[in-house]
Image 1 (tube, one colour):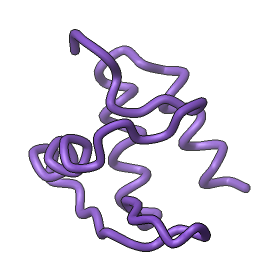
Image 2 (cartoon, rainbow, N blue to C red):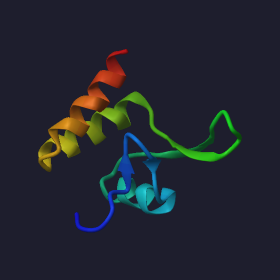
Image 3 (tube, rainbow, N blue to C red):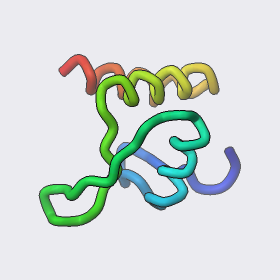
Image 4 (tube, helix red, strand yellow):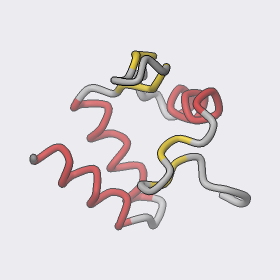
Length: 74
């Protein structure tokens, strides 16, 4: 993917609509929820997180996949 990443651990989701569209193209169910600050955010259940981790792993981003797996294990 060229250009800025849609998500980084340091900054979170940069473009929620683009990220949600990417998830939809991947067949990953995403919901819009409200975070602790009252801002809209993208919420994924454990199955969706596992699917996203697998997608990152398949596309050469092992660090992102491992970060998701660690988050699921905690």
